[in-house]
Length: 377
Image 1 (tube, rainbow, N blue to C red):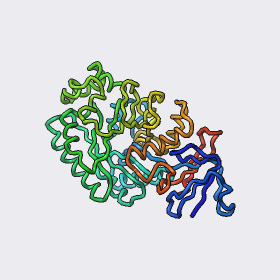
Image 2: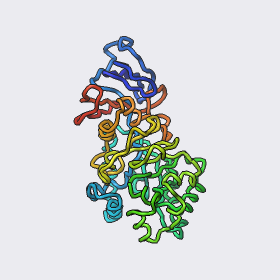
Image 3: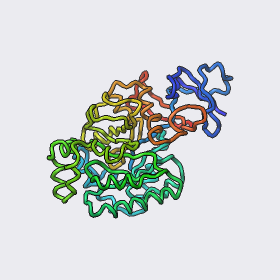
Image 4: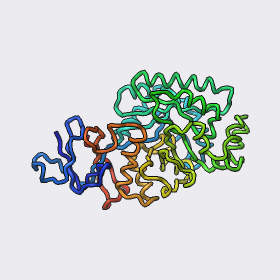
């Protein structure tokens, strides 16, 4: 039994508590929240400077791309980034596995307890069998040629079933509106079964995506025409969000939303990956348009980031929004857990095992350069 207390306790399902006490079991299960340190014998209290919050949920990651750190140049745009990602298979399997293991260790050290992870391969399967973190595995489909859709779905099913065979959540999902023709979207829906809880999709990550659908022009339009992509991708959609109708309004986590407008938003969950957005496009979303009960945060991959740290992502969001600490921590923990269906994570509610993070070196209630996380449970 442990009694943890700091300057402030952020349970996230209720208001922050000054000098609140978190009572947990030796296994990390939340037993109770106490509002007064005097309720606990002083010798049993573990007292810290800083704030206590639940473990972080990384709502969007590509763990299998960890070996590509530094391959893509900063600020070159999305199409250049795709070119860098195509080098993913030019590495030894041992190097890929080593990078995956080290990346997961980095997430754990940075207080991350759950991950929404994009998978195009089974490269992360071995590491995930260790169950160090809770994962929702999104088996991503990307196919602009209709005659190859059947093979794309067949491959995705094989990968999905391998993750499910080791007891992990896994769903087949679309990559993005510009890379998924209507027929592929329909196949994804057709294979959505009772084990599926959620879809995720890269959404409005670039201005070129909006140009494609709204104006039928721009770099994406030229690129798709150049590879003889299915014209239905842009002919049947006037906006990126039109793909929602094809996905039959399943529960969706929309990721990036860098160039989203308020009128584009729906009741779905939204994920932001600010450091990756700056790395690739040197742009950020307008955070004022989002419902902060539906906004999550992710790191994206080490191919588009120099670290896997939710706290570093929060610093960028804080600098570009009016969010207070409670909202920042909700998007870092509670909202992601709710979106991904991680019922034991996200808040200090009784019976949960959410992990316990201590955030230190704050300036008042602000994250600053040099703020850091210490994992307590």
